[in-house]
Image (cartoon, rainbow over all chains, first blue to last red; front, side):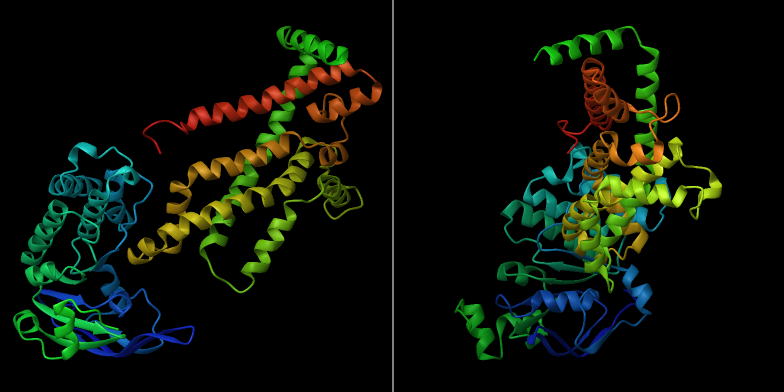
Length: 237
Length: 234
């Protein structure tokens, strides 16, 4: 369990060019488990995730961790919807986050080898990362995010456009991370995945948190008409 | 046509007999332009990268200025460096006028904007690609510049080679500040200008072919050394 949490969002709003993308959001994230964020496109899922990660400029309100800002920045990682590959080899992509924080070389190699095995790319470590397939890139991005052993991990649709096998691999890595007490906050469009992984869940609509609850209630007994419609597969305008 | 053929023949003989004048002139050309290239790259590569990733007040102005400076007329640069370095100028005491150092200074001024501008173009694209990741990984400004320079090194090589091409073929500025003095500041381009003026087309052409061969040779060997365009490296 991390002493970074709880994370408190207070009256958070993000506006760009006069358009409200998010807010007002008031939210407290508790120290353990996996929080799943669901909602239609453009409902503010990604913006909310970026606000929590501290890479989105706030128009209003505040996001505060239980520790100082600088320390919090060091202890979290983010996996983007489209994996960003450094134009380097697979191994160098894995080494990079550790090199940034001046990790001893032996320690770097141990962890790189561990993760190479974990994501099944140990035979392709010398390959340029940009040449990997979509699923391999996403797994590499996930390994690169976890290699610093972050306390908090954000994932933005990590399994979008991936097939069953890759999705299963990624979910298994996430389960292991959860068991090791990594706090995970992720978005998904895959309701099956949401049910499989979520400890608690948020439903975003029009830039605000429309409904929230522990996974058991959230999925079996949604309270609001909009969330019920969303689960039925209706198109929510 | 006859002139070109004669030029080729005499170029061939000048090269195979290791003509001492030719060797000296060619080496000086290389020395001046490579020195200018190294100095200009040391300034322009970090500058172009910095301009690509940093937002500051006069950034747009700086970039348009840089792009405008790419077209600096070498003769004017030569003239200004001449005035600055001449006996009565502010740096006259250094006694640099009509030395290879003066020629290097002029060429650095000519090619730095070119290299910086191409660097900025290339780095802007790479930065757009890397931006979110590098912010997310909590990198420092210096770490970002290092990462971009390293991962964009092929593009930077192109930028530097463009600068080298401009330097080695440049004649206006180095003619003015170097003075085309035999055994001291004569280089391939100024020698060509001189021989053409004297009507010795064969020698001028021969020097011209050597110059072209030199430029191609440098480009090819740098590409070969850096292993660009090889399977598995990109």
